Length: 332
Image 1: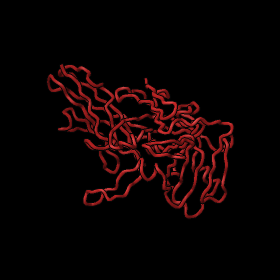
Image 2: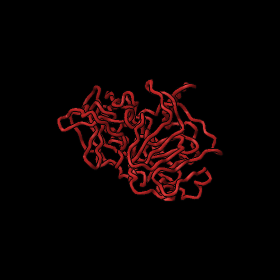
Image 3: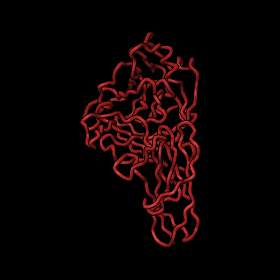
Image 4: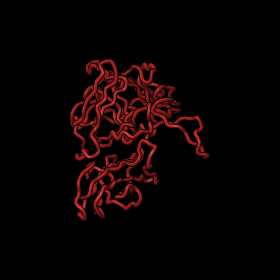
């Protein structure tokens, strides 16, 4: 089960399951990670309102009951934390696969009538506070408008239950395939705009450096949006004992924003790789992979996996938030 750390005056962290615990196809609600850097906003659902404005023909103010006028949908998708914005390249492997319910953001924006010139959609959360010694009056993120008009939800439920306060009650944004930082909790306002916002979480935190053709940083930053290809081995578990010469089923989970096209598995710490059987992709849910492996003799072996997306991008060995994960087993 997940463990919870709560500072009443600050962040809430619910640690995720370890990779070998990711056995459920849909992650139980109690096991879904939570990371609230600015604390948990406690909102009254009866008085909650969502403002839609900016470059729209008809600004809207919606209550929870107003959302019932739109078609209700359910989306099963991976939900992954990008990691600490103070240490963005350290893998955290905070990953879940959740059934989200709510209404399409595109339907709500269609009723407001996005005007010409709208290229981005800004979303505001009710949480505020201090991160890295910097004061933030409101959590603000943005999306390209074509992505916002795709499968993004104004979500009010997870796995058939209402959102909890820790997950954004009464309503939050959910962006399938994008890192969780973009799925703004405690949603209060959506703005259609011509440009990206100049905010703490759009220009400094949750951004990556732009690398030039010379391999050096250019000084510019780019948003952390789509989830990079990643995989973990679920079984065998770390330090599990396997029989010498026995055929061992190695299986795990793989995921990426646009889906995973291939997974390779290594039984010798990455010296040699072989293709694994891969479950077909379905939307943006995670995909199961498996391969049979036989230890060549006694000793410790490191099992690793690496995923590729459709563009050919692969998990790197080290140095990135989606770096390769290895599991040591003992053959005896």
